[in-house]
Image (cartoon, rainbow, N blue to C red; front, side, top):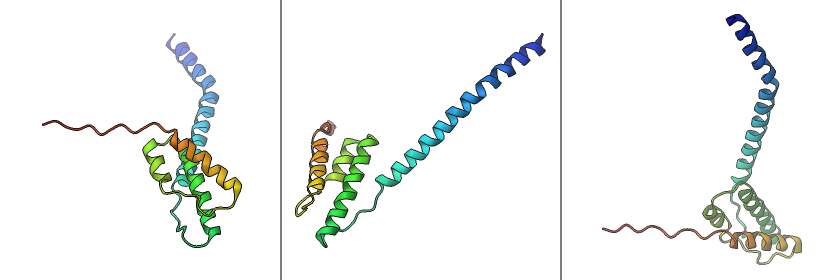
Length: 121
């Protein structure tokens, strides 16, 4: 009797193996995507004070970084900090200016940070 029960259990587990393999593959793909996203968000800061073209390239990198932070649902404070100081001053590319305005609107729509809790003595 136990032999039949063990056989049924093994049969049941074998029938679930393809589903488990599929789940594991999906998890590996997800972790790979998360890793790539983390690498993208960790882009190095660049000096934007040289030429206008360099400034536009740096601005494009900052836009992409901030877009990825929104995608990763980063903390609002981190997004604000990453976006602070970004300016489109001197940029002539209209598409780039539009993207800056879109991201600025998203940053402005982030929820307000809670006020720090003061301890009472």
